[in-house]
Amino acid sequence: MKKENSWMMNLTPEQLHVIRDHGTEAPGSSPLNYEWREGVYQCIACHAPLFKANMKFESGCGWPSFFSVINGAVETEVDTSHHMKRIEVHCARCKAHLGHLFQDGPAPNGERYCINRIALNFERQIK
Image (cartoon, rainbow, N blue to C red; front, side, top):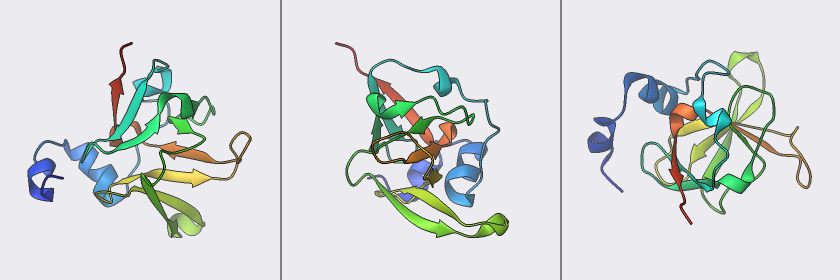
């Protein structure tokens, strides 16, 4: 993994706002909402693989949503900002803020990882 200062220089102010200041992007603003090709979604900061394309689903929430995560790729913690209780999702490798986990997803586990596109890089797999 790169030292934080080196990878931070490659990120936009908007990306840094999301991954370090726990910001969010506008719903519906992500071209990744319409990405359905085979591939892997990676952390924008450290490039750790987080989600496989077959874990993605259309939730209608306006952000890329996933029903599962690559084993060990993320960590969660309780977020009580904005006068509510939510589960925040972070990259396990570099601790970048990615989005939130909700319990309103599809079967089998009912989970919805609602992730900011600006915190992701999509690496297409070509067969």
